[in-house]
Length: 241
Image 1: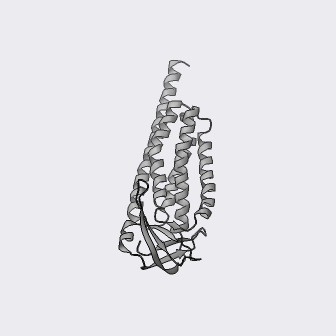
Image 2 (image 1 turned 60 degrees about the vertical axis):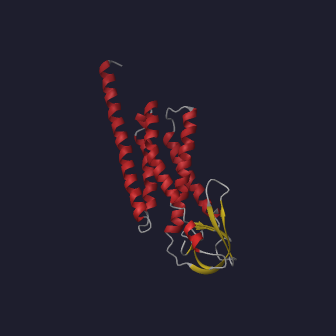
Image 3 (image 1 turned 45 degrees about the horizontal axis):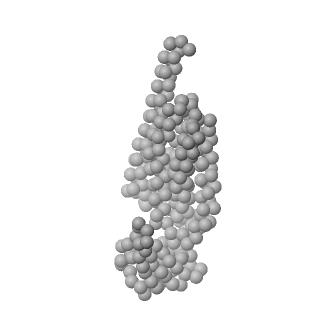
């Protein structure tokens, strides 16, 4: 390769590098704007979680679109690193939105989550196939991105089951039989024990927010709404929690 050809090739690489960087930066900006919308309007606007999932899929598509650039080892590492932030934000946000979704039995939900995760992971593996990665780097990226894709899968499936469920709830009156605080780990958890749960769709022991825990007493009657779930996995909500 003569100097002219080498110069031309370097110019093409620089152009591709700038395009890849703009691609990631734009996705990151959209991610942050969407996250602000989720934070302030997430309970009012349905479907925002699917926008977050779409951003993850678009980023995975970037591995295809910039494949010729990513065949250069240092460019591959750079693309992974620059895209890590938007992946973390989207996956963590999807996972954190499920914090107030209570299911008596999550096993049926995981029967849907695992195939969803499998599809996303397969897309990721196909996307990075044949890239110049060492075994160590490959294992590292698969592990880290795998955790993020699992979080995203859990988040979007739980979101679909709860937030997209428009069915009317079955209202249950129950009595708090006990309440206690668990501080065995680094975190403090607040629990109440309730009665009359047979066939009602909610467990005997329920984790609640600290504010709700402090507002109720043993022997007090509370109301629990049980919903069928969009994916036919029942979930419940304590009124006032």
